[in-house]
Length: 187
Length: 187
DNA sequence: TGTACATCAGTGAACGCGCGTTCACTGATGTAC
DNA sequence: TGTACATCAGTGAACGCGCGTTCACTGATGTAC
Image 1 (cartoon, helix red, strand yellow):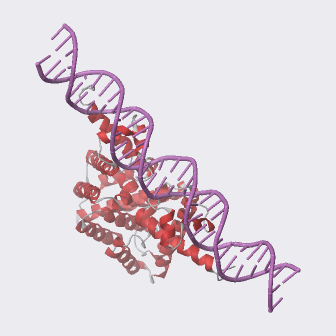
Image 2 (cartoon, protein in one colour; image 1 turned 180 degrees about the vertical axis):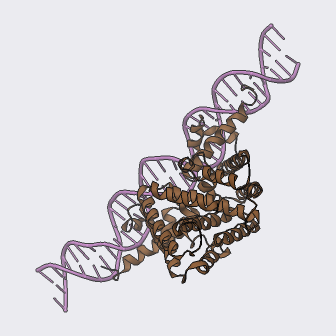
Image 3 (cartoon, rainbow over the protein chains, first blue to last red; image 1 turned 90 degrees about the vertical axis):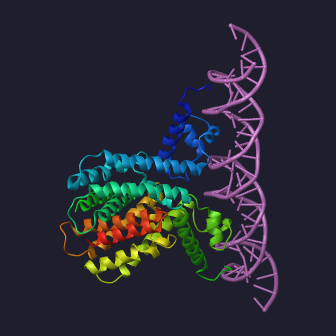
């Protein structure tokens, strides 16, 4: 072969990274393959050496970005109330609000996923289960509800809050939403 | 004129209704004007007698569907814990889960709105303020946080929970999310 | 060591298609005189 | 009362454009003998 070993894998990874960012920023339908390939430093013809179709690319982008989110959760040390507070502060921050392209895919892409093919939704459901399992273990002991249910509520409030704040044109309104949700998730 | 009085307004309303449903079901980018006009029983050429552009249509669809959601909130009688319980039971139900086209636009379209033009985001922000005002008045007295903050958390958990549940391909997983959020929002 | 051929990641033009928007036209009714 | 013209919601073909996908080709390297 005329390329060093690992070259193809590296190219595939680069396409996936760029596509994943563009999908989150613009939505899946508004992002064209020519644009993705240009961002990866190639022309569009080469795409099909790496992926079967645009929907396969979307599926793999979901998979890799959700695994990245899971990685962040696992990397954040500790548990209990303190862990929750720190996780919420990071997730519901102005930085995360502004950084759609490299942030959690859930607030940016969940509606696109809900409209996607069954295989993509399966990838999403599997990753969501891993995320809720991880969170359930980190939940504080107190509370009437089982940890897993509190974990779901934490995810829903965080994802919903960040997403709603991103829609608001007014930064003050966005801040108000982020602050309220940050306080609510730690009780 | 060759059409009875009110005919044009009625046509405009019909286009808006159909567009609003299609946007929620398929996303704004995946919904074409020919499709919208066909759903309204017309051909595409007539569209521009009623709206300036597709983005204007999107903006008006957001406005009308968010006003509808606000209408449902206002119509639901009572306040306090009971009101919250009943609102959550309706919002986080299997019926609402399955009925994307005629349900609340927030879980279906917020990412599309976040990517839209400033005018559309302004319409969204204004409606969101009306919704949180309405909810804050209905919140139970108890709790450490101000009613408005609890209202934001209620919205975020409800919208986030419904959206996340819609993404899951597995109905059991979806039910688990809905149940957990329903219990969490009433404390 | 030299030569012929195979491999295959990537190029770039081409395909059919549906998009948002424009526009000349239709035809039923209202208005002017 | 009758006729000529204006109005305007809606039609349907056309426009330029970018999409997802295909495909003949390139050219550097590996392999066979």
